[in-house]
Amino acid sequence: MRAVRLLLLVFLLGAPPGRADSLRYEFLLLPSASAVGTFERRAGNTQIHDEVVQADLLLTLQKGPFKLFGEYLVSDHEGDLERFQLGWQLSDDTVLWIGRFHQPTSVWNHDHHHGQYLQTSITRPDIDEWEDLGGVLPQHFTGVLAESGATVMRSWWLRTAVAGGIAPQITAEGLEPFDLLRPDSNRHQLGYQARVSLHPGQFSESGAGIVLAQDDLTGVELTSPELIGFDHAQVRLAGLFATYAGAKWKATSAVYYADTRLYYTGSRGNDRFVVGYIQAERRLPHNLTGFARWEDSAGTGNSPYLHLFERFARSRRVAGLRWDFVQRQALTVQFANTLKFAGHYTDIRLQWSAAFF
Amino acid sequence: MERGILLNMRRALQLFMLLCLVSQTCAASHTLVLVVRADSKVTDLDSLTVRKLFLGLPVLVDGSLLHPVRNRSDKELDPIFLQQIVAMSQSAYDRQILNGVNRQGWLRPAEVNTASRILETLYADPNTVTFMWLHEVAHNPRVRVLRVLWSN
Figure (cartoon, rainbow over the protein chains, first blue to last red):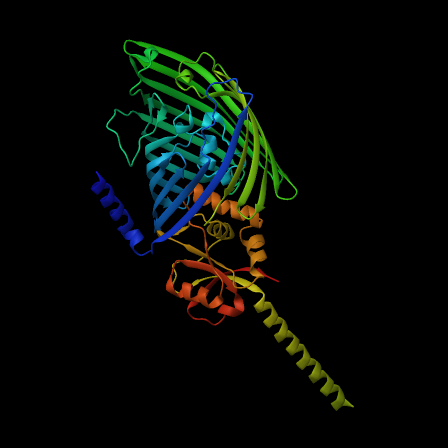
């Protein structure tokens, strides 16, 4: 299998259109360090195990229209190959990827990925949380991703992304994506996603769009008595999102509607829930940015699917201040109040984050 | 008397010609042009494509990726680059470049600090696209001017 992948890589990087071009590369390091304190704890399981120190390493190798793009995250509790994509630039605005990618229907992750410096708040909305930090929606897939853009209605810009690939599985610890470095032999099912958004211009962050997904998640090694006979879950997702990015104000919002079905041996259960958030950011003098986010949900209390993940936050209020004290380095302080199935808690976080080429 | 008038007219004409020459030289030294290697496949790039290129977005010509080089050999070039070429502030440009690398694995434009190094880069790679002062490339047979980007 490794030899096949290597041959494919050599073939693509040595193919005629790329042969005339020199090999180019780009490296980006996004380190961060944070301290977390929780108080007013009424929940037994609070989210205090976030990484304290982490380094996100991104590397691109490009030869002609072909490129290899990788993201490796090292932290005080993990080291994971988060993205590993072989890309073919079909035209200026269309690229076809194969490999492990972040699925395009997560509004937050599609924009920020793992780089802490590139997001204003310290934490992300819980509905877009990574699998290993208690996330309830699958984020990492291994398969094919096609991204494209085109001018529509004279000057507007339409962005599209469609993807399909091996979906994460549900384990006793939560969702677990397919690991390229340590592949398992468990049964994996597939997931498909699509995202369409319209923007006032090609370079504009402002815009609005829709996302659609259907992901089948196999249950593996679930020993809990209530999950005896559980085979897999199907998550159907539809969402709307909008972003306004002005000179002083920025606002990002997303609403997801999920229809989940749990398949047991001889029976089936299903439920529906809605989760959404809105984050507002205001640029202030002295390179300061104030931000606030409101996350909320409906229909989550009785969702058997969400009860598979103990750490899901049903609602959360976040507020904070970021200070970009030198170029590409920032200090952020954030307060949050979170309600989980088992109770609520308040936390305060302090973070240093940076970006280095 | 007539001879004196003729002499004055001659002097005025000479002064006028001198002023024209000086103004032309000044204009040439403050005209920024987009350049490629003389044998490059690139024949024309509109301002939107130039903006895309220097924001780090991929631009293909005949299946070959163009390689933008940001000229930083002169401090005067930075504000012109930000205002006329990429049309954004330094912080917005920085963020755009970081987002491009993080989201799409785009390559940021190379930055070169001397005119001689820029010419070397240009001579070595037919896919390089850069910008230089007109007086630095005028009459250079190895360089082709694609368009004027800015002039005072």
